[in-house]
Image 1 (tube, helix red, strand yellow):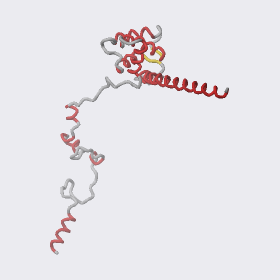
Image 2 (tube, one colour; image 1 turned 45 degrees about the horizontal axis):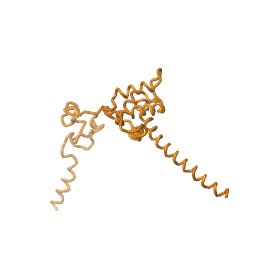
Image 3 (cartoon, one colour; image 1 turned 30 degrees about the vertical axis):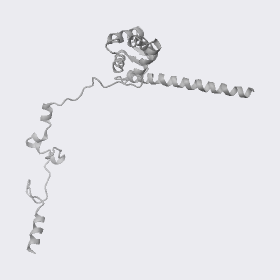
Image 4 (cartoon, helix red, strand yellow; image 1 turned 135 degrees about the vertical axis):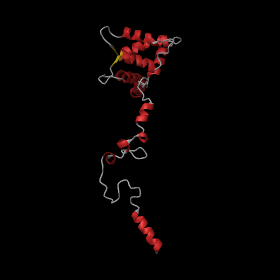
Length: 202
């Protein structure tokens, strides 16, 4: 009987472990997002602490700031409240505290637990977007300067008709040992002409 009663106990422990693993998985997804934003724009960052600038970016990119319930001012106030007085960053634990504070404002109609879970869903699996990154703008001045068909003089000689660079041939005067005058259009056609004439005579 003692052996039989020992088996269910093992099952229960394995079930509790799998549940803990699932919970840990959810937390790690949140922590992964935290680390991505924490190191954004800072090559020396370890990902364990987050600056106020990256905190604000996370709140914008993950739609925590909706412009109605939560504004940029709310985000800044919560950050200042959570972080230490002499510190400029927050840890992952403090990050979760800040989310809890904001979740009450962001999801007003829900319970504290539901609001926090909704907040986690907004962040999990996300990373910093490339908003605000400088994009190249097509300029008529630049396109005119880079249009090889409009080049003149020695610059024109550096490119072929398709606009592809000739390389060394376009920069230096290479010696032509073909026997034809430089620039002769029908170079290399003599042998074909001779053969054509011989076939006509026959």
